[in-house]
Amino acid sequence: MISFKKVCKSYPGSPEILKDIDLEISEGELVFVTGPSGAGKSTLLKLISALEKPSSGSIIFEGQSLSKFKNKDIPILRRRFGMIFQDHKLLYDRNCFENVALPLEINNMSKADTYRRVRAALDKVDLLQKEKIMPITLSGGEQQRLAIARAIVSRPSILIADEPTANLDKEYAEEIMNIFYSFQQVGVTVIISTHEIPVTNINFKRLQLNGGAIQNLIGHVQLP
Amino acid sequence: MMIIVIGITLCLPSAGLLVIENASQISKNIEHEAEISIFLKKDISKDQIDFIELSLKKNSLVKKIHFEPKLIAWAKLQSKLDVEIGSSVSTNPLPDAFFISLNTLDQIKIEKLINNLDGIDGIDDIIIDGNWIKKLRVILSLGKLSVMFLAILLVIVLLVVIGNTIRLQTLTYKDEIEVSKLIGATNAFIQRPFMYTGMLYGLGGGLITISLLKLSVFGLNKALFKLVSVFGTDITFKGLPDEYYLYILILAMFVGLISSYISANNSIRRLKIYK
Ligand SMILES: Nc1ncnc2c1ncn2[C@@H]1O[C@H](COP(=O)(O)OP(=O)(O)O)[C@@H](O)[C@H]1O
Ligand SMILES: [Mg+2]
Image (cartoon, rainbow over the protein chains, first blue to last red):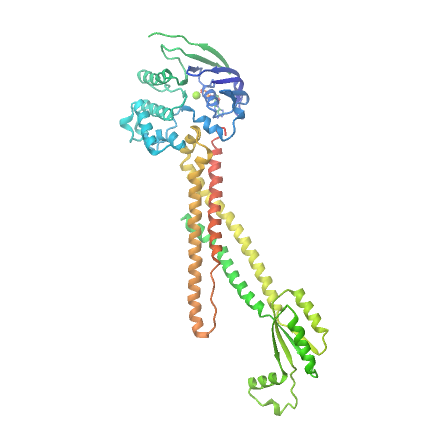
C-alpha cells in the first residue's frame, strides 16, 4: 500500500534526520513506529501522509510515486489519511461537534450527512454527550479522543497517530489504544508512533528508528 | 470602516474623471461650432461670391454656411453701437463675409481647406477661431492622463490596504487554515472565504464611491439650477456614463479579489506544508 525506497529527509539548514529508509506497509496492518525523542518519528509520519516531501528517494502510494502526483491531487490524497497529531491541533474556537465536522466541510458533505457522521464518530469515542462543549474544557484523554473522532469521521483507509498516548495515564492510554485496535480489526491500516510498544494480543509490525536508519521488526501475538 | 476607506479612495480618481468627462463634453459641443470667417474683397462681383459659396457647399468639411452681405453687417454694427455712423463715415468700411462652421478640428484638414480657399479669387482674409480649443483639448488629455496615473496609484494603495486587512484576518484564522491544510483542504477551499470577504469589501467600497459621485452630481446640479434661474443659462453637470459605474464596481471587486487572494495564499505558504 505504501512503500519507501531509499528515502532521505533533512530540513533546510539541519543535518539529515532520516537516511536511506526502505519500508513497506500493507493494507490492514497495525504498525508501531518507535524510537527515542528526536529520532524522526513525527517526520516519518509526515512523509507517509504527504505533509512533507522527501529530500531524495521515492515514496509510493498504491503504485504511484508521490512526485508524480499533480498539485491538486495531493490534498485529495491527504483526505484518505486520518491524522492524529502529536499536539492534537484541535480548534479551540469551535465546539466538539464543529471540530469533528471540519474534514466533512472540506469534503463538501451535506448538512444532514455531516450531522449523522459527526455524531457517529463522537459516539465511537464516547464523547457524544459533549458535542456542544468547547474542547478547551476537556481533559487530556478527552481531547485525544476528540482528535481521533475528527480523524475517523471521513472513514479513512489509513489512521496515523503521532504519540497518541504520550501524556496520558496508563488506563486512559489503554482506552485510546483500544479504539485504534478496533479500527484495525475492521480493516483500517493503523500507524502509531510511540515511545514504548503497548501490550497487545494483535499482530503488529514494528519500525524501530535509530539515528536515521530503520529496523523492520515483526511483532507477534501477545496474549494477555 | 474598510468599505468607507475604499469608497473614498476610489472617489478621488472617479471625481477627476467626472470633471474631465464633463469638460470634454463641453469641448465637443464647441468643436462643432468651430468657425472660420472668410472676408471677401471689396470689389468682388456677384458671380465670384456665387462661385465661392458653391465651392464651400461642395466641401465635405463644411457643416454650415452663412453669408453676410456688407450692407447687413454695416446695419447690424450701427444698430449695435446705437449711432448713425453713416453720417460721419461716407463709405461702408465692412466687407462681405462668409461665416462657416466645420465638422472637424483636425488641424491638417483645416489647413488644407484654408490653402484651397486662399487660392480662390476674391477672398481677402481668412480667420480661424479655433486655436484655443486645441489648447483646451491638450489640457484635457493631460488631465485624463493624470487622473489615470492617480487611479493607478490609488489602486496600488487599495491593494495594499485590503491585502493587509485580509492578512490580519488570516492571522485570526491561523489555526483553522493550518488544520484545514493538514487534513486535506485544497488551497482554493482555504482561500475562498477570504476572497469573498475581499470581494465584498470591493463591492461595498464601489457602491459607496458610486453613491458619493451620484450625490455630488445631484448636489451640483441643484446649485446650478439656482444659478440658471438667475442668469438664464442652460448648463447641467452630467454624471458619468452608466457603464463607468459598472467599471468602478468591477475594478473595486477585482482589487478586493486579487489582494485577498495574495494574502490568503501567503498565509498558506507560510505553513511550509508540502503543496
Ligand atoms: N520543521 C522542521 N524544521 C527543522 N527541523 C525539524 C523540523 N521538524 C523536526 N525537525 C527536527 O528533526 C528531528 C526529528 O524530529 P521529529 O521527527 O519530530 O522526531 P520525533 O517525533 O521522533 O521526536 C529533530 O531534531 C527536530 O528538531
Ligand atoms: Mg514527534
